[in-house]
Length: 259
Image 1 (cartoon, rainbow, N blue to C red):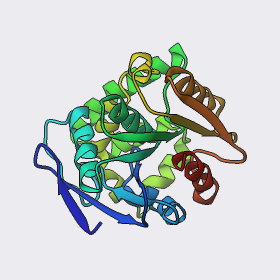
Image 2: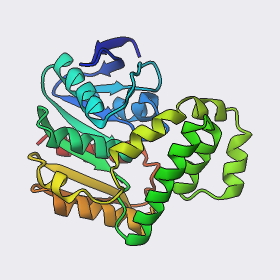
Image 3: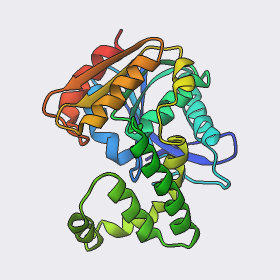
């Protein structure tokens, strides 16, 4: 990231952009930085000015406590102002929840596209989210960053064997370094359920996307988002999982953002 803007609370937010045209801001999800969504910038930058940024508390961006979701919305407001005053937003996973909150708050947003924002659609899943929130707060409060990462990986459905292997990976130290930001994504997701009242207040077109190779509940959540917003569309991408291929997703986003 080669540029910084200063958010309302004084936090420096690192970002970079590529391409020309109307602005599209890419919003990453949990346990990720702007680099995670950067591969999507290349195909989109053929038609748009694509902005990639590190959310607060990760990558090259700063942080300031106490955290509130409103501060992350303020980060997006400052970023949009710095790059032209209006933008479309694409959010992946919990980044989609942040993008939807930003649009609902009245930011100058033209469109919102989200990919597999993981809202719970059953009572059992809501109870699991509540347990996760409680245990995550305990782990982070006690400085057990590795345990916090494990809790998140379990929530995503990874097996104990895969999690054990991840702990031995050279990537583990980087995951622990941004573990505190897991609490930020948890706050963005609220109680984990579909926020019907908030979504009903989103005034712009919303495209909610899921992969047909992802679990069924992901597709159910995508449909619930599209049904809850006033101007929503749902789309399923053949053969795609939560780790969607940029070259498959980019044409879908380009068509939507180009309207």
